[in-house]
Amino acid sequence: MNRTRVMAVVCSTVFAAMLGGCGGGNSANATIGGNVTGLAAGTTVSLTNNGGTPLTLSANGGFTFSGSIASNDGYDVEVSTQPTGQTCSVVYGSGIINYSGTDVTDVAVNCVANTSIGVVVNGLNAGNSVTFTMTLQNDASNTSTLTVTNGATNDFPVLLPIGTLYNVAITTQPGVVAIPLPGSGYTLPVQVCSATTAPSGGVISSTPIVVDFTCN
Image (tube, rainbow, N blue to C red):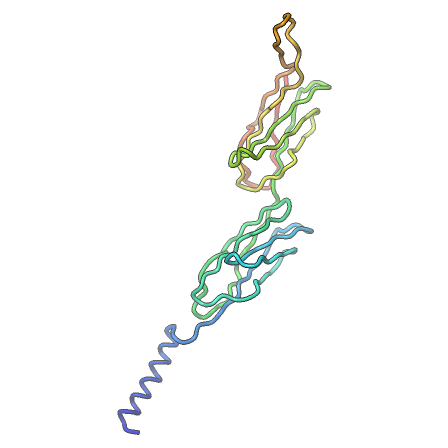
């Protein structure tokens, strides 16, 4: 083999090695996983990656999706089914697999309890009741009704996730009495109740929210 041929082979080999070091050659695959925290006992949360087959988890701790993602391809982990009474959010759930195919292990799924919205009515006469309606401001058609007959805290029969906007309003004041004018057809409330704390707002934590009303 002449000198020119030898140099060509050597240069070709060196160039291939340099190319591999700079990102050439064969790529690799990576698995996608992370950790779940805050999931309540007896509940499950389902996750998907890139909209694929859901991965259902029933306990806190590490998880890994089956299959792998090729280098330079993207991944996107989302919650497909929330646990009963909780809302889970995903942190570090999307990105691009690097050329080396390094496994992703830092997807964080954090679950917190949904919030109860309650009502306390003060000054309500015995035998009277007040009916409340809670409307979700981001979904006006989504309402819940609650009738209160005593001074204890009464919770609406729904739990709200963090970020939900709500409004609590009286739909029926306690009892009515007819105005004593023949044929008038008018009625007056036996009592009039009004809010003494903010009846609307947004859920910012899992701490229960109570709206106070006073009746006169």
